[in-house]
Image (cartoon, rainbow, N blue to C red; front, side):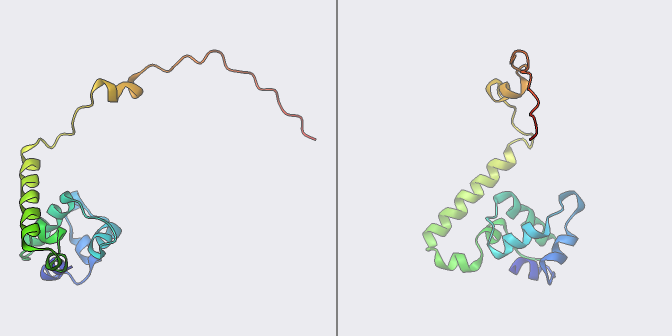
Length: 130
């Protein structure tokens, strides 16, 4: 919420309406992330941080994922470790191709296999109604 307010948006709905069309957010998802009732993933944190930073807020994905209230409860060493792990994860994600991974033969098996022969269909006798 702090990042949204710092970027000049007075409500979650206004921030969502201003989000880029190619990466439109759902109002319910963003609001749930902001309330903390839905876990926020790294990809969403990066997207929100980039959006709010472009509008003047000084915010990082770490700030989004671990708000000030949360960081105050963590020890300095555990926070430093979380930041280090998140930065490493962000760097690794940027190095990977954005293309989805190819499915191996076993994963494709069920959808690529021919339809199994179940024999001739059983004839159903119509039920007599009382």
